[in-house]
Length: 73
Image: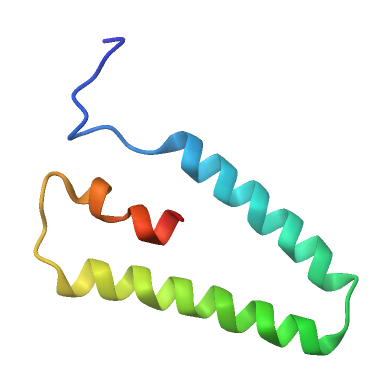
């Protein structure tokens, strides 16, 4: 139980850090100019599109969590 199989474990720490970073980024962009908001939205949409393309085009694999590392970085 304490050391689950790495093929089936999710990334809760990465999820929490990603949510915190998204919140900080949202607060930062609200306090900045409209031009900065457009840049942040374009970056966020590029990351989401990349994740969706990864999920749609790659064949499902048990170890797909390892292949998502570039999206997390």
